[in-house]
Amino acid sequence: MKLKKILFSSTFITIVWIVLLCSIWELEALHIEQIKRTPEKVFPHLMQIFESIADPKIISNDQTSIELVLTNAYATLERAGIGFLIGALSGFILALLMKFSGIIEKIAFPYLMLIQMIPILGMAPIVFAITQDIGVSRIVISGVLTFYPVAANTLAGLKSVSAENENLFRSYSANVFQTYTKLYIPTSIPFLFTGLKISAPLAITASILVDTLQGGVGLGCLLSQSLKGGMSPFVFWQIIFLSAAIGILSLQVMVIAEKIIMSHKVRWNREKNKNLI
Amino acid sequence: MSNEITIKNVNMVYGEGGGHRELRNPARGTVALKDVNLDIKKGEFISLLGPSGCGKTTLLRIIANLQNQTSGNVEVAGGTPEQARKSRKYGIVFQSPVLQDWRTIRQNVELPLEISHYPKSKRHELSEAMLRLVGLEKFKDVYPNELSGGMQQRVGIARALIMQPEILLMDEPFSALDEFTRDKLQEDLLNIWSRSLCTVVFVTHNIAESVYLSDRVCVMSPRPGRLSAVIDIDLPRPRKLAMRDTVEFVEYVSKVRNSFEGI
Ligand SMILES: Nc1ncnc2c1ncn2[C@@H]1O[C@H](COP(=O)(O)OP(=O)(O)O)[C@@H](O)[C@H]1O
Ligand SMILES: [Mg+2]
Image 1: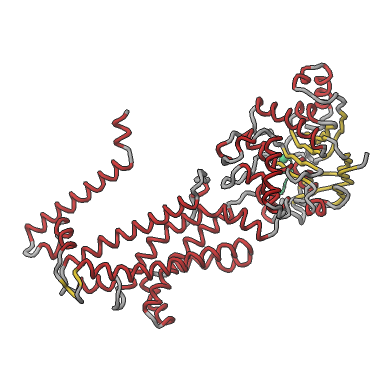
Image 2 (image 1 turned 120 degrees about the horizontal axis):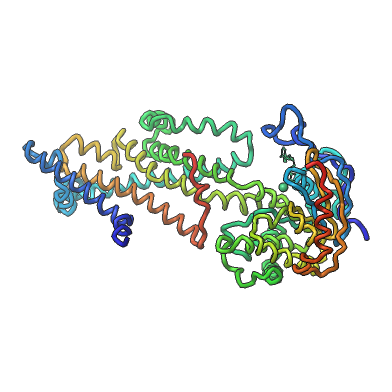
């Protein structure tokens, strides 16, 4: 019984996953080593990547490889963060407006889907043409991708308020402001976080992807440069690992924020929280 | 004694222009209430008794101004139902407790006071008293999902009474509870009512419950929903649970049961 408990504990499963993925990686690296002349340029060992982080060799602008990667990561993260905040805020406000007025919902909601369908790489030149500034475009695109999951999930949350609860507030003759602040918005908070958890990694991925379209500072820009060669091959791998780490971290930040906001021992109605994206 | 609630020739037809489009029956509207006439006196405990679908909830919601009747006239606390609602003349309790998960018990009970902009000290004073009345003073700082169904329903009652309303409207408040809890809450409700002196309109489909609690039982029948009998319950008060085993009580129960038509 006890063994079973350990076997299915989430930490154990995580460890198994990590070991499994690392072994596959190393097997492939060994294989490449056999057939290529410069294997570290094609598929390095994990250890080589980690060693490269500590490598003090200056590769560009007085920076070591990891310093270079981190500087660029900061720029990307900043744009993604600003875009995420703007997108989340406007998604939340639009959801409130759609709940408040059926007409606004009818006008806006069916077309919100369209935003999701335009490929990011297609959207980027359009946004760039409008804003005339690549930095601003990157922020806008992160925002646009954040917007829909937040708006749709929050709206679902606002609509999950029971008729009895609405009747209760009507019986108190509560005004619109009170009904929203004391009923609709608190009910929608767990749904809002579902949206934020979907959006946060999305905003970062989008930001990196749009970086690749033009030069400048940013993880994506550095990524394209490193692919073209001329730089230490390990820069590429550092970017890949750091991007993954940032994505996971952004999700964790949302999870922690959710826990703080719902810090009281409330078991929010989880079943209601499985909703559309 | 003067009337608290007067219901004159009230009809309610669903799906004939009124109501939500998607719920409308295209063939013919549902007659939920047909020619209902009823006077409820101040301080009276009255129950609306009947099988499901006979229009009990509909009648209660019309009194509460949560919906409008198709025709007829309703007066509540000397004005229209809308005036009564706006001046917070009634408190309402539903079948489910309808508590807010993110508020503590005390905060839940204080909700109507918050909406009416009572100052914090006054809110605390009133909620302390209400929670004591329903026997939950020890639980004021816990969250609703830590309480049993019966306790949650007590919170709902405390919340409905905290504005000291003239009228208490209850829609099958105990029907989701187990029998032991229900017995206890029925007895407690009578105690609370005898102290608050409000008028109670209590919806139920349980015959013994209506006889035990009420001064008058209004028997309702379905298709079309109507008031088919009003039976005075002349049992002495205060009433104890043991009273349900007396001959008089059993006779009232069978009298009420025999007054149903067309079921
Ligand atoms: N919103 C509504 N739209 C259409 N029909 C309704 C609506 N509410 C209730 N009804 C119908 O009216 C009748 C009475 O309902 P209700 O008042 O809920 O009865 P009860 O509370 O006694 O069970 C039922 O036949 C029900 O189907
Ligand atoms: Mg009902």
